[in-house]
Image (cartoon, rainbow, N blue to C red; front, top):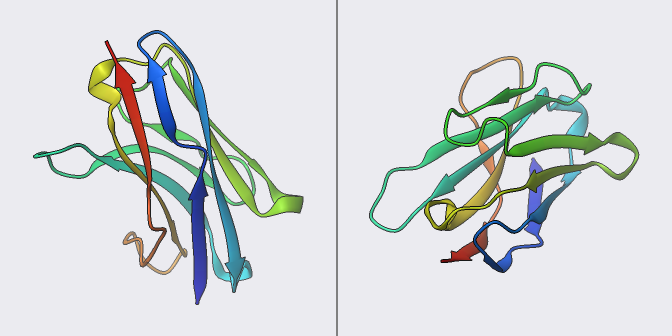
Amino acid sequence: QVQLVESGGGLVQAGGSLRISCSASGRTASVSHIGWFRRAPGKERQFVASILRSGGGINYGDAVKSRFTISRDDAKNTVYLQMNSLKPEDTAIYYCAARTFLSLEYPYWGQGTQVTVSS
């Protein structure tokens, strides 16, 4: 099993920045990809970004390209999401997820961290 814990969410004004973190523990050696997803009230879950555990293979959702940056610190088993130029529509619960090469599905999820952007 892999355990994921998000942190760093909070309230920020539009145009501001915030960095959230995802710390992984357990059988992390089996993990190939770490992803960030978000769910806004009344909306479906949305892909935000993903990164290979090795550090390459970065992908972003269209809504956050050029504003968000995903990175990882392998020594700390932590993945970060730097969010700049935040907009009110970025308000959501942000979830960290992990998967292996065996499947495109993400079986491991964190509890989420709330990000609220005020206008």
